[in-house]
Image (cartoon, rainbow, N blue to C red; front, top):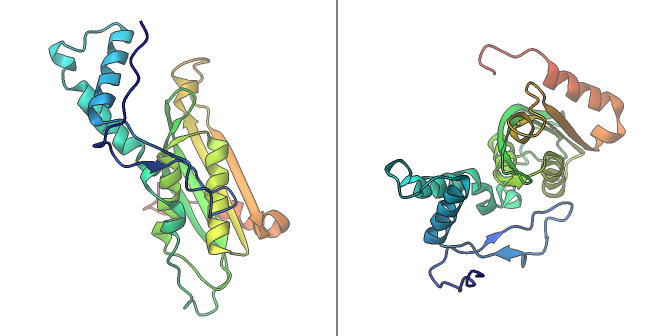
Length: 228
């Protein structure tokens, strides 16, 4: 028998924006999706436990639905962040600084949207300022805002780069992501030790080979004792 439709619940968690800017930071804000309640999320986990062949009523699994729902809140917190807003505050007092700004080895944790398996790796982000700079922590937060969503690596790389270009309006942006996909290492072809590399070069990083080479040299260069 078909399941009854889920009714609207006035006590639901507020809607979250699932429409992310690609090349237009003023993207359609109407693309929203109401979240299920906590109780509905936990019941969904119980359904999956039964489908896997176990009994959600047994002692070891009694609190699992609550724990999974809590973990999902953390893993997918990027849906609650607005990457454009994160970059809204910038600084113009830079004493004429116009050289490359690079943040490398940003820890990346995401989820494959095809199998909901972890994507673990690192991102390297650079931009050429055009009169203003942004706090370096904001670069890492933009990576996290897009990473903490259901993703494919190619799209995530483009989203990060496009947003930086749209909001900061620098002379150029470069993003490189290196990551291991557990949908490939723990299932399917079961190939471990394989990482995927994607890049997005915009502005000077795309048009000027020497700028691109400098960026690649920096992110591939030796790490200090305090770096991973």
